Image 1: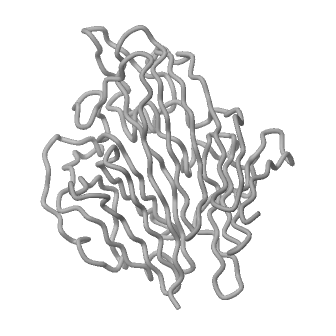
Image 2: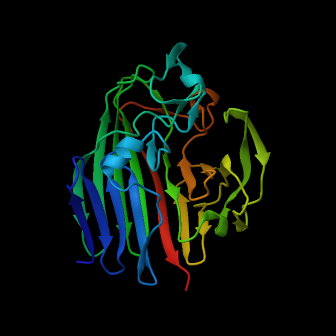
Length: 314
C-alpha cells in the first residue's frame, strides 16, 4: 500500500502522520488545534519540512499565544476591533485572547480534536478529526461543529477541508481561515512570491480594514521578498483557482484556495525566518465591516477547502 495514516501517541494529545511511502512526503497534524505541524518533501536525499511548526505538542501548548503558528482561525479571522460586534442589535464582546485593544485569531485555536477516522490506500492518506464548540465564550455563545479533513495525495499534494455546521437555532456570523507559517530551504529574503491579486485592503494604524481597496500589483509576477515587509490582506482575483506560489532555489510551494477563501493575508515577521500565508473566507474585522462575512444557517454544513502542493526544482 502506497499511503499510510498513523497515530502518534507519544504525548498526552495525539498527532497523526500521513505518509506517501513512494516519495517519503509526510504531513503531521496535531489533534491540539487541528493544526498542520509539518509538511515535508525529499530534496537531494534530505527531508525538508516547509512548515515552521513546533518541536512537539507540549511546545505548541506552551507557545500557542506567541505566533499562533498554523492555528485554525474560527469563528473570526485575524483582528476583531475592540473584540466587539452586534448581532440583531445585541452587543457582544469576545473574552479570549487580545493583542492590545483587539481580539485576535478566533477562539478555537487551542481546541483538542477527536480522531473520527483514518484512511490509507494506494491513492491517498486521510484523517478526519472533529471538535464541538459549545458556546463557552460569552462573546460568541453560539454552538457549532468543526470537522477537519486532511488528505495527502500523489504529487506531494495536501488539502484540508473544514466542514462547519451551525448547531444554534438561528443564523450566526462566521468567517474561516488558517494561520500557517512557511519556511523553505532558504531564508525568505532569498525566496520569491507570486499570487493572483491586484488589490489589497486599506488598513488603519491598528491594522483594521477601512473597507477601502488599494491597487497593488507587485505580486502578479514573481517578486523577490528581499527587504519587503508585509502585514497585509489581499483580495484574490476571481479567476478559477487563484494560486499563491512561494519559491526558493530548490522548492516550489503552491497554495490553491477554493473560491470560499477570497482573501489572502500575508505577514513577514521581523526575524525574516518564515512567512505567514493565510487563506481567509472574510476580511479581518468582518463581524463589523461585513467584508466576506457569512451568516450560517442552522444545521447546514459549510465547506472551506485549500490545497498545498510541493515541487522540487531540478
